[in-house]
Length: 242
Image (tube, rainbow, N blue to C red):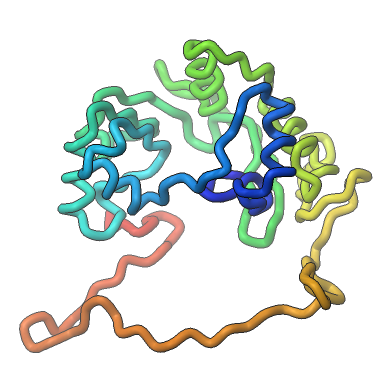
């Protein structure tokens, strides 16, 4: 969906001039062709003083990211930290501002799962207290900074994503329905339950495989520490033990 620091939607690289120009024309602003920071690079840049502020959206990095001491050092090094979350977390303890957000059953929008399926969600109830939906928070902040995004609803936002992403061209809230749509989705709404049915989308149609040299793990069990604990990506405890 374009949240990676080096890609636009559908994994199109930010260095692709044709892709970048399509977004520049739609948004009316110049865009960089340089890759952004990954999360570990952000932490390093914060410690070095190259990154002054962060807006952390629904992630408890002070609890779930590796090398907690380094992460905490990075958060403490920032001049300004905004956290957007539904609960107070270990990370919000370092925040200058906490934006109360909404859970998935309190907002409208879409999710894409690991099988490339767009899924539509509708609010079962409204956000509690002073909490707002992510859509409200992001569009309000953009408006306060002088840029009107031009969307009245998440459905209109999805329409813009589809218009700027050929692989999502036929996606709309109306078409997603209860079954969902698996991208790529053609302009007529035909989706792709099987991504590569006959060949890969590469020159010659064949996939490319490469053997990587063995790399020893960063840490190993020894007499002093005979057990290694690995936090897994479980539904209820994403990389965290609580």
